[in-house]
Image 1 (spheres, one colour):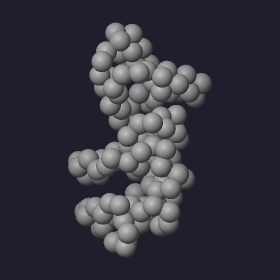
Image 2: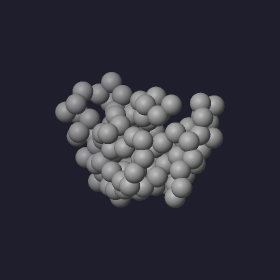
Image 3: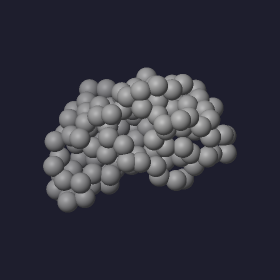
Image 4: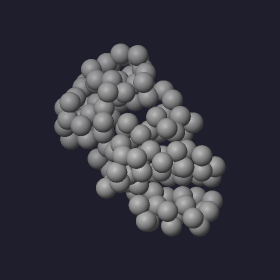
Length: 127
């Protein structure tokens, strides 16, 4: 948490955060998320915390799978996105991985992204 405070306190034009919610209690997570949502400058944040992403409705969302970055999606569209194993017609993204082909679709699929707590658990469910 100290590192997050120091990064925000310097009022940077670009804020880089790697897992800012890691080892932070729930009440401070919410406060930090609210602070970041109103930050007003560019933020690049790496997180596995899907539940907190909803605080950032206007942000772009990217997924990193096996070292490759995919996107951009909009956080506000998170509730409409699904991930499935195999190729699907009308997909908005198809990714070939070491554990098979994964497809992201809008409106229907195997697992809703809105129900996921993290990308790792989401991929485990589908794979």
